[in-house]
View 1 (cartoon, rainbow, N blue to C red):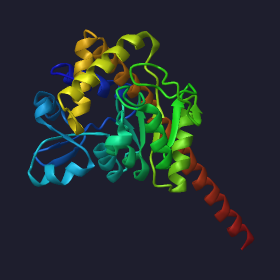
View 2: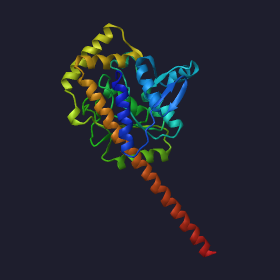
View 3: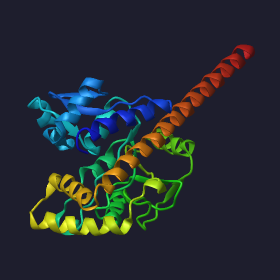
Length: 295
């Protein structure tokens, strides 16, 4: 997102999270220091930096820190930092995936392998529709990642509600999501969870319009040899231009909606753990009491 929409959206997202009982912690690297949570000054600085802040995946973290650089963390890097401080729920717009023609280029986002090895639940609007969604889901299965969808059986396609791809797990409430996350963590599977939340119907942009814009943007990226981590920002910006800004409006709407659902899930998870802990303490107390009586 361009400035100042990025700053306004970030602040609104944090407000939504707070209003729903959770604590926001926006993650970034500033002057070579990982920040788990940004104050207003740091948040504004990051927003103004925009594209001057390097897009930072897991592989880029050591370089950014060693050179005291500024990094805008992708899903993979954000998951890594979140896991280090015990944050179990992470909200984003959409994750990376297998790029179209990825079977030839091997262009596969590190987000997918991170989901396979880092125990953090990622709440997103699915996979960006500029990517190959069926192959992305196949790759996630290979990585052992639990993929679920919120109040639907279909995996969302970022700008649109449905990708035509079914998911193995449907979750109908924040409490259902919390139960799934807690079960995965207790089993110590070591992998993450991807929960796809469809964009709200009232904000869903025209699927045909966006698909047409995506096809054109992909052709332009190929003609201009735009590849690697430059591809996604280029494609999203071009699609926004071709759709007259409707894709950006949809992008902001889905990020806010994900924040709302993610906050409710985080609160449900905290409540679940609190209840389980109290129940354990009570059971232990009863056990001690019985032992004393027997003695």
